[in-house]
Image 1 (cartoon, helix red, strand yellow):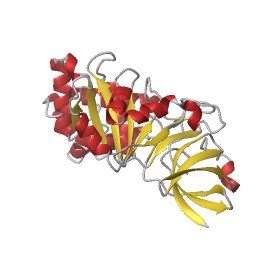
Image 2 (tube, rainbow, N blue to C red):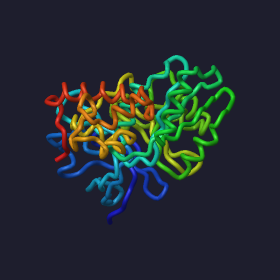
Image 3 (cartoon, rainbow, N blue to C red):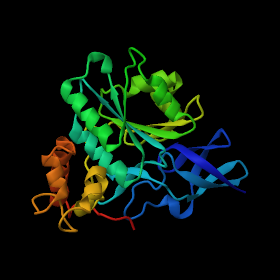
Length: 310
């Protein structure tokens, strides 16, 4: 008997999977037991899988195609991929106006990756009750001008928490951000039971050692699922060609066709429409500066990471 399930959490061999609103434990079978040349742990939170039931035991026989994923280099080997989340409907990029400070460099690296993976990303600016500076307001308006949705929140004053909750309803959502931005407070405001489960590590450890390197997907009371992702101090881009970066900055991509050269990198080429737009402030200057920084980093690291999935 074959069934379809949604993976909530696992330790590399045993996984908690939800099937028809019931949580079961399933074990990898066959070739899925072995990691591939380019991956570390083949199944992740958010994966849809096919299950084979034999008596009272479930086995994962197949990972269904992913519509998107969040991954990073494995700690064991930089050329191995560790997928930490998959099939995300909305990614909430949580930042704050105070401690930690508002960092457009971090924001733009996340946005670049999520654009590459075609994950709809919403910028959540938390702690707005502490006051928003003129610089932060300028950046927020810049992101809105490009087309990003930005929501200002405060758990202390319950500002716009209902908007976050509405978007999580019936969807698989993931929260990502630096430590201290208030992710836990927002999760707790949406559904207090989520944070209770996050703290009950033994319940979800499945006999394996609990580690913050893995993500967990939690059912919430509004019918959706929220992904608790590993804490992120920095977000390094990888698995992306340096000369393709321009495709993942929407305002730069839109102007690329107007450049004199079709392969323009928008650095110092003559007749560059993007550079002219940055100089005329028709596109946010901080975005253009971040583009150049990321481009230089990708070029320097072009031979370190593998670039394309097999």
